[in-house]
Amino acid sequence: MRGTRGRRSRLRFDGWIAGVGTSSGTRVVLGHWQRSPFGPFSDVMIERADGERLLLAPSHRTADFVRGTYSFDTVRVVPVDVTVADDTWTVTAGPLVLSFTVGRRRPAGVLLRAVPGVLAARPAWAALTNGPAHLLPTHVRTRGRTGERRREWYGVRDMRPVGVVSAVFEGLDLGVMAPVEPPVRFGFGSVPRKPTLTRVTTTVEPGRPSASR
Image (tube, rainbow, N blue to C red; front, side, top):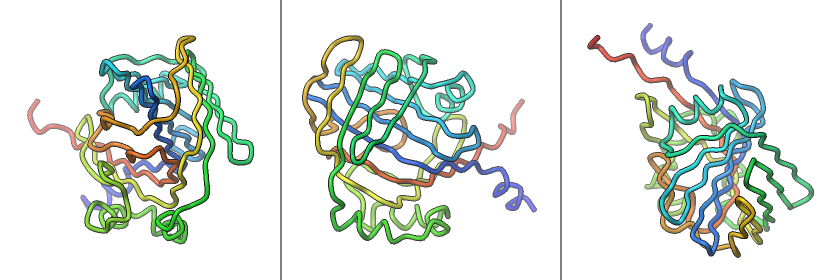
């Protein structure tokens, strides 16, 4: 019964994660969630060249959940809007204006796209692709422990390379596209070093309450 209750308490998010670097040293991670326990929403995680980690979230509810799962120095609640036209994504999130294009799938993306959604939603699939399968790039981890004693699994379903990036933060141009280097430090893993758009089904299991009170 204990295991059944644990499975029922898991939260599932289905959508896309884009990770891009810029020549200014700022790295940006977009989460675009078409289905989630909070309804559709998008959020942006930014790590600046000086190491500051910033979360831009569209509501206090989503901000509280995301910062409870990951680590940030600053959290701002701002409107986050994402539009997709053909292969161009445009993001406006408070002080950030970001646009990027995506290219044709590489072999790993073709293989991952064939994964059935039901399989990708299972933590066992995330465990299979974590490291030993070598389907995913260096620094990418598909399972681990996060803040507030939570467990998290990323079921990867598709990957496409990012082609061109334009980004402005607080009125300053962040420069041209660059690798996501050094890796971002929000959670237990980073996004691919090469800017990438990834489709994922993310499962979060709330942490068990501490035995000591």
